[in-house]
Length: 193
Image 1 (cartoon, rainbow, N blue to C red):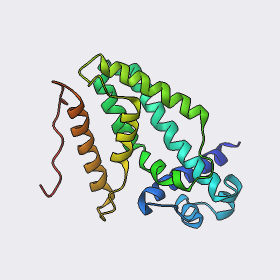
Image 2 (image 1 turned 90 degrees about the vertical axis):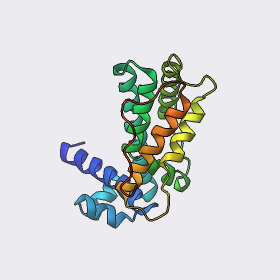
Image 3 (image 1 turned 120 degrees about the vertical axis):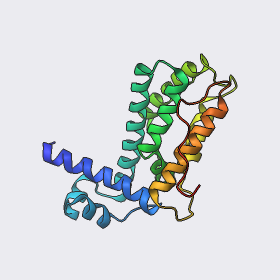
Image 4 (image 1 turned 120 degrees about the horizontal axis):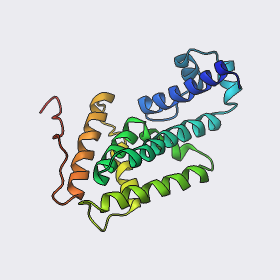
């Protein structure tokens, strides 16, 4: 694929993720093309139907989140901090979009990503367990906890406030899972506190 075509495809996927998060559901293809600054024909060349666009958006978010976690395992020596940073990175990478898109997908099965995600969760938990993390915590607890924090609140909060709240609550969650371990800097108060 030519470099400019690859850039257009990447831009379309990133815009689709952003719009999913903004509208809290499936964006129109016209809105994706317009926001990406390409013609609708370009979108159709890359994604002939809505399912292919949504699958690409979900894979993009999952791949970025997993890659961030894989890098953190290698660079952050404290397992609890690696877990915390992974969960924050997943929120910033738009993992909430996967929660929104998943019910809209036909056959959402990505064995390659599932294998990487399972290995990542095992390694993150093993590293964190060497620290002060509860011993009864499972990979599923982490995945479903992150899923809950990533869900939009449907209260009409601006996106930046909603994300700040998710990050704040995520820190409370991680701190609560640890015995004698708290983050180095306290969560920032919300604006109206």
